Structures are given as structure tokens and as C-alpha cells.
Length: 195
Image (cartoon, rainbow, N blue to C red):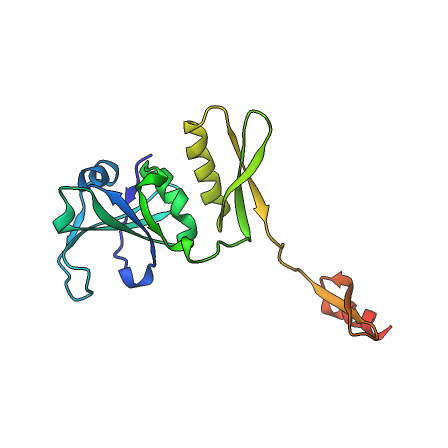
């Protein structure tokens, strides 16, 4: 699956640094095509090659590689939401060994979203990652299932479902609160409070 080029300019300041990859320019050109060259020196990064692309599932990739490191393996920076790093690596065809640093080593991963669950031939199940969008989790599952023959991948919702409606809360003499009922309309819930 080849990423498609982005048709609009995107400011790098809106993106966050997600990880640092150990890759060569040739590897990135094989997967993403020719880079755009930026000569900006004002932001402190120096002259660098830049790739901007979007995948078929809608995942946007922004990768910077310093020009001085173009011949050998350099430190390329992947700019995106940090929870999507595994998804981006699968699209790029890179293994986790290419990652030198990840921002989610310093931040806890979210518990709400769509979990990609791996199941082996013995029925053992484990969560691989939790992504914010269901389409991205399904895309990552398809990419991984083409590579792993004895494993299957499912997408399941994780976390607390959003509350819909108005809750009627009861409080006892000790201050403990209990949810008695939930109604979609505030009028019905207010009648229960009055009774």
C-alpha cells in the first residue's frame, strides 16, 4: 500500500514529534517517493528533506530527515499523534527496531478508543495498541494480518462508553452517591427527583 501525496500545505507547528526513526533517505524514497526539500534554518532544525503524505485510510505522515544525514542511516523525525506510531510503522513497512525514541515512553497511552486485539492459534488474546479512530485500527489490523499467517486481529471498543442522558443521583447520610436511573430527557429525570 503506497501513501498518496498531500494536496495541501500543512504547517509543521500543528504537528507533534511522535518518534525518531533510524532510516536512510533511500528507504524513505522507496516507500514515499521523492522528498520536498526545505531550507529553513529559522526553526533550529537546519536544512532537511521532508515527506508529506496521506495513506488510503486517512492517516497523515510528516517525516523530516536532515540533509547532512542523507547518505547514511540518519535520525528521521516522524511528526503526528503519538498513539498512531504503530500504525505509521506498518504503512511504512518499518519494524520497531527502526525506532530510536518514542514520545509515548514519557506519556501514558490512552485507555479509551479502539483496541487492536491479537489472537494466536491457541486462542490467547492480547491488546496490541489502542487507537482513537476505528478506521485506523481496522487498517492496522489488515496490514498486520497480511504479514502474520497464524494470528488473527480484531478491533474492539475499549474504555468507558460516553454517557447519554440525564442521571438521577441519590446521596445517603454518609455522603455516598448512587446513580438511580438515567433518562434521555431532562424533563423525565427532574420528575424522578421530585418524587
